[in-house]
Image (cartoon, rainbow, N blue to C red; front, side, top):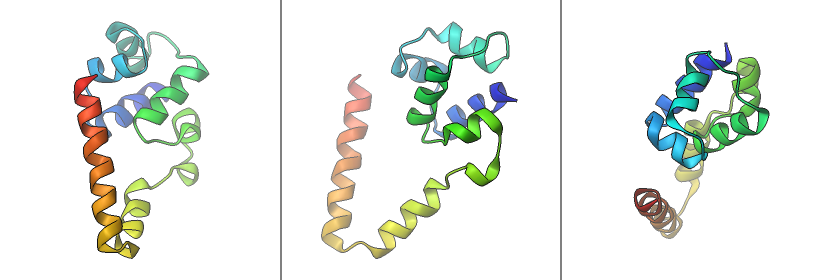
Length: 104
């Protein structure tokens, strides 16, 4: 059920319909129609949603859990191995991205 996985990915990423629709350059109504299974998104739209929601596009299309990327685990592993200097750099990158997203 693609539409349910799209909604799940958006909510897991902490994005509203409005926020995600702006980022992928479609109307809020169009995104809402995808999530309610009224319309089928194109492959490129699903790829954009995957990108902005940090989700694996194969999982979104198929629901195959073995293809689903566990970003949280991967990020924690990187942070556990990082030096304090690297952690500070990562923090600043996240802060810049957060500010950039708030402005747009």
